[in-house]
Image (cartoon, rainbow, N blue to C red; front, side, top):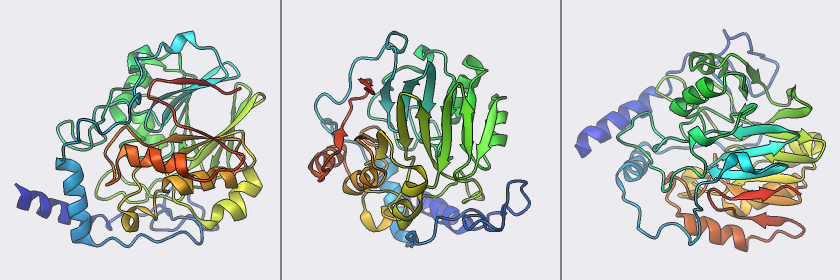
Length: 345
């Protein structure tokens, strides 16, 4: 079985370069650096990812087969399921991973909705969540806006999105370029694709897509065929930056902070950062996550993308300890429990 798995994974790695390209898409703009005929790419100065095939195969195999320790989560990491309808805003609830329910200006905003048991195309294998969502999918209040950062399985959860399309048919979905078609196939009718720095306004709240340093694909033939991004959510009473999945690069200090910052709260990813040589080009570590919040002029940094799934060689307690220890003068560092609600005041 191990030999068969290795052969299939190696074949997938080889075929992953066989993408069709985006130059035939209506959104393609050759004048933009991050648009290329073959697909999207990261901003100038971003680290390149140098994958060694057999090491990569070993990493994936361990993620698929390892059993987490019984005490892998920090004490108090999971609260009893939240009652989403009983908490008026402005506030936010951490549902788990990069999924937040944000209540601003009378809107219910959902980020990267991940509710499935596994972040995988298969129901029987793949990274399995440590704990159930802080709010059950069926217990969500009426959702007005859904924000999606990219198409990986832990951010673009197709079964959950299909249920959301049925239960919240009027929800506006904001997603990076290339994701409108799959979202409409799942049942959404109010979808907008956004390139970096484009703005959408809904109910008095502005949503602006921001650059991120990452990648995209869901299968063998779609590597970087859709874009990845963060989002700044601006309401009269608060300004939130949802960083999405990202590495640290010069684009933030040289460009994003100058065009977007400052923000009140930064939602920054702190998990899936090991092994560092493999993860550094696509994921910040906890110290870099705090640096991102500082660059963006945030008053508070709330950790996300940790303590929910075994996506890297790092453990949840490592992410927590390193985030707590990272120097952050002038920034309120916040580690929420799954299911916890925090006021944005």
